[in-house]
Length: 379
Image: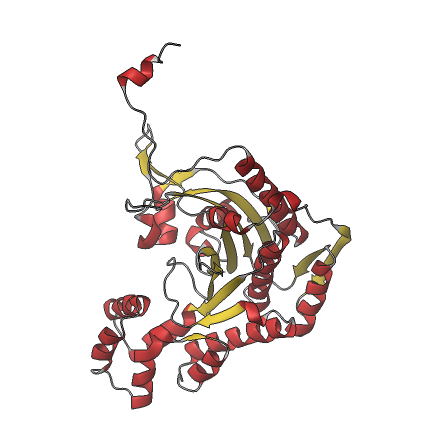
């Protein structure tokens, strides 16, 4: 057999950070995708298919510097600067705000597909991720946040991933502290980076120049380590006095109360030092970690200001699962079956009952594979 001509002329290279699936790997991914899509539909979410690229300005406008600078960009023939999608939430927000304003609220959508982000070269560094996610738009109340967290649990359990933790925080807690300290934007950003790096020494040096009681100074210095069980909420509530931080703690406490009533509180930890993430988050933020290796399986949170940047100011909360990280934890995909759907859809009004009672009913319905759709007053 002759050697193909092209092999004598150049050596084909595979770009770092891209992936290829074939054979059994494809079957695993397709099966898991089908199960997750069925779960999301059973919660009353509709699928949307998104474009692979958009104007770079749209991503930079929505994402800020964190991901906007990591987008793969290119010029169209007309000179427009485009980018492969580094994020799917921004595309959903732009699509809803510009093309779906006639739709009744809330708007509940799910999607799947690749995102592309420029990463520094290195072993194991991915530049292409496959995600499945959802966005709930039009509800600014805590029950919508709880719904999304329960959907994350439902999704993972349906594909046999049971050993995970959800680290839950709230950006309002940190911003309330910055507001009360009267820090400039530059100082606030520096403090955020120090908390992210868990650099207590830098914080201690800066705190020395602030007019704080010894108790509050000690709390600020210890903020990077303020994570754990629900007791961290009580400890923080005893120290902070600004309204914004206390409202954030109240929302986290309300979520914990519901999860405890559903006997799901063991799946949660609280991290008040969680200050990373996209610029658009405004409320709860969470990350899902698989155990025992601690890989990040997914993330999400509330982003009430993003749709307004595209012309329709709606509150919103979302979730993304990265299938490339989830799939290795699925022990036997071949044994999984798409969950059956029981009977007609149950429409549940979220405004007429206490949160614990509301979600006790919702979770019971989902436990028997019933379709359920939460509705309530928008915004």
